[in-house]
Amino acid sequence: MAGTSNIKNGDIVMDAVRAADHDRYLSALYAPADKRGALLALYAFNAEIAGVRDRIHEPLPGEVRLQWWRDVIAADGDAETGHPTADALRATIAAHHLPKTAFDNMLEARIFDLYDDPMPSRTDLEGYCGETAAALIQLAAMVLDPVAAPGFAELAGRAGCAQAITGLLLLLPLHRRRGQCFMPADILAAAGTTPEEFVKGEGGPAAERTVAAMIALAREHLSAFEKGAPRLPVALRPAFLPLALTRAYLDRTEKTGRSPLAATATLSILRRHWLLLRHAMRGWTPL
Image 1 (cartoon, rainbow, N blue to C red):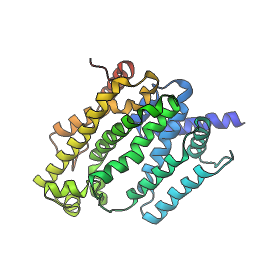
Image 2 (spheres, one colour):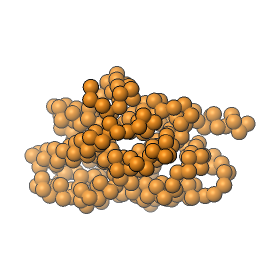
Image 3 (tube, rainbow, N blue to C red):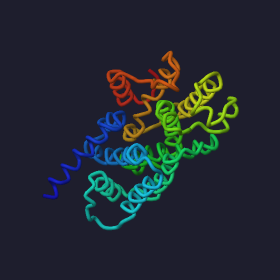
Image 4 (cartoon, rainbow, N blue to C red):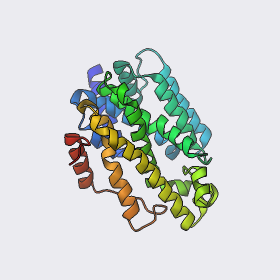
């Protein structure tokens, strides 16, 4: 029965990632079969905590939910929780000796999502990206090759910042509807606006300058990642594979003809499959 339960939980976790984070779902398919379940468990956990605000609309219950995850991860023993993602994550942490502090830091960072406080500065934004997207990449790398992974932690940091900042740009319409502002206050001030005006205003030159500055920041981190990416071992490539889509998303955000404040840039499923396949096969070597 335990084996049947594990298979069932694996299917549930896979379906959860496919529905909530299709880009990471596709990238996980390029991982070795014996590592795929662990990557999907990490990605399902990330989707769960990233979506807390969508499901729980008040900050305090959201913090309670994040604390539940802390308790689940911190608990010793192998008793099942009854939550497929939580059980898969605990099994992954144990099997691959993943550091629980990384998950605690990730949960701490996600508290910011529950409130409407402005992001104080670029440094704070990069710290948030480091504890969330970059940490997820590094944990995935540890699953794939625990010996090689530590040597690419800095590259994971660059990759995580590029991916997360691009993701925030894609989510701008949703965040503005909520009254959230992930745009750093110092970047907003340099562009001639404020968090309140950026969220509630109708756009205009200052908002456009803010978006342009954020795109430039994402490209800065992406370029730094791409410079070092040819050194990535083939074994670690699936952990970084979602970055294959980042430049295309940024290009589409700039060229869509509609303001990213109101419209989300998208890539066709065919385009996404092609980019992932190309980078899975060739890495980031020049074409």
